[in-house]
Image 1 (cartoon, rainbow, N blue to C red):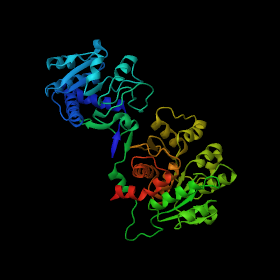
Image 2: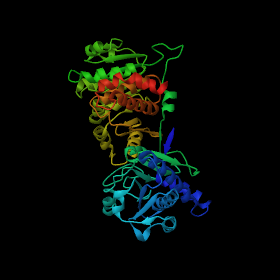
Image 3: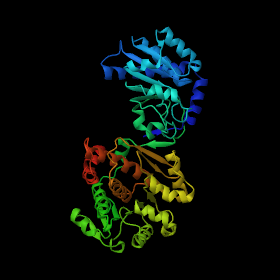
Image 4: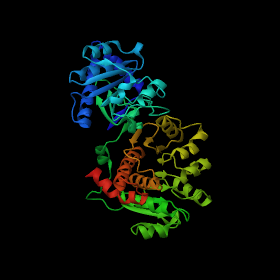
Length: 474
């Protein structure tokens, strides 16, 4: 499991190491790593290192110093290095002197046009907001691969927000510990390489599950399991207008290794036709006992749906509330009264649904999605799975982030598939945060497998679930 630490936490830990290290030693160590990764990127993209041309985009501060020292190391491998100084009076003096001693030169923005690689050392962790106009003008000229020092300039290090011109990197080399930007704006960072500086770090701001973490948590049947011990999930979803939501959610629950799936709703006939192994009934009262419920996808927001949600919340088992269920909770806060104290509830909003349920409590989404999700989770005593390019799963005590590895899940019905997976994992006994992290991970994998490089509908994502799970757990 990986973690991400806020910039202030990293800065505090760095100060302790700097106090016990010879002046300049930490920067040279970091910049040497930048030079190594730059050489690897040149080799991979151009087939060689010697004779290639590298442009350094150098701002004020330590990131600019890292770039300058990296340029000095690259000169030792016969790389032509030109520094474009965006703030010449504040350029790192020792780094600039080292580059010049090694045979590097100070150039102009036009030198970027001829570079085989650009190293972004414009701003560091203390910067906020988009690139300034002069820096943005230079970046707009870049056509070569980009290696970012610590983070792509113009992207907020703690939130991943991009509010104007910013760098998009092919590779990012960071130091001491990963920052939130490396997961919340993964597409801007490219491949991230961590250089260990020996920092003594506390618990991270949030964690990221690896395939190994998901493998160890995913519920697989044992020798003594049967359909009941493996988890019985109930799905209350769909309507005459949206029967497909029921079919998708139920299918995902079935294929996500639920031991038994029960369905309650007006789409029972459609569910039976597609999934004959499901026990489908017309009402919650006839569904039978379950170990977790999924409620909301395509259910509608009328009185009948409201009554169903109240029954589900009062059933005394974990509940995943999605889509229309979230809208109902926002419109009728008294529905919370049906919930048994201490019974886990997992909300799965997208941005607009989040606004509906959070803004009455004075919580706005803003650019810090992690903070907003955690605040809502604490306020409502629930787990919040905030959908987005990077999915945030937050309780009051713990946060996971699942960085999207592709864009293929941006399709109608994809959220219904996720809710079915979540229901199966909750029924199997996973706590809501871990269930959310595992489900989001496998959901993305299924989207990738279904797409195979081209857009795919949600029904194809459901069909890809067995292969997605197999690729993780085998």
